[in-house]
Amino acid sequence: MDGRWIFAAIGVVSGAFFVLNTTLDQIPRMTRRWVKAVRALKAAKAAIEEPHEK
Image (cartoon, rainbow, N blue to C red; front, side, top):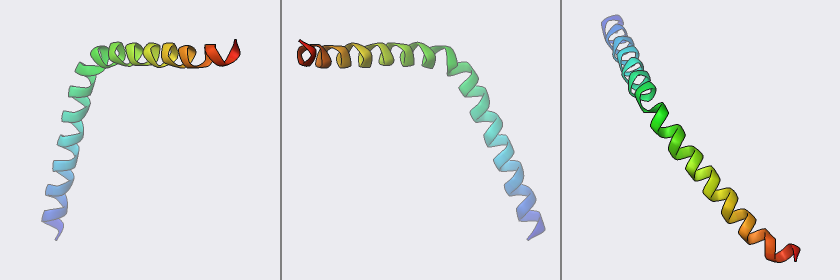
C-alpha cells in the first residue's frame, strides 16, 4: 500500500512537471491564438449589436 502510494505520487509529480513544461512552451502560441479568438468574438458581437442599435 505504502509503496504504491509513493509510486503514484512520483507519477503525479512527474506528470505535473511535464504538463507545466509543455504549457510554458505553448504559452506564447496560445496567447496569440487567444488574442485572435477574443478579437474575432468582439468583432462578431459588435456586428450583431450594431443593427439593433440603429
